[in-house]
Image 1 (cartoon, one colour):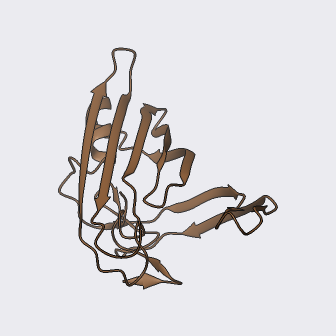
Image 2 (image 1 turned 180 degrees about the horizontal axis):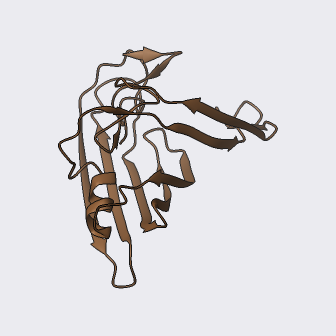
Length: 181
């Protein structure tokens, strides 16, 4: 499945040329730690290795991330940093923060587990929420040694989206955001 030339629905799907049907192997290791000072720390490592029996010289994909979240005054606040290199040899990084509404009747650890989709209550009704954020990027193009390297201007975009009561983008069900990683 693709959208605007990008492979969607799998985290590793965009790590090969669209239409190149090579196979590959992926792996993930995740460590969650209930910190003694409160909250939860998450370390994650993901890797992907595409087979190289076509004309594309894929490289091994590596991603390392560290995140922290904790309940605070009826919400869960947190952040995540990830960095790595993709299957085409480009490096990347991302810094993100989030705020999630918490179940005020739950114990702190249970609330964190529920926000990760590990545990949930019996309520399966939909909940209304708002998705808001800011995205900033700058594109650097380095195609070949024969073409000039170019760096585009910095761009930012604000996003604000209302939620709904059904599954899909902008909806939440049983404490888990639909489509969340």
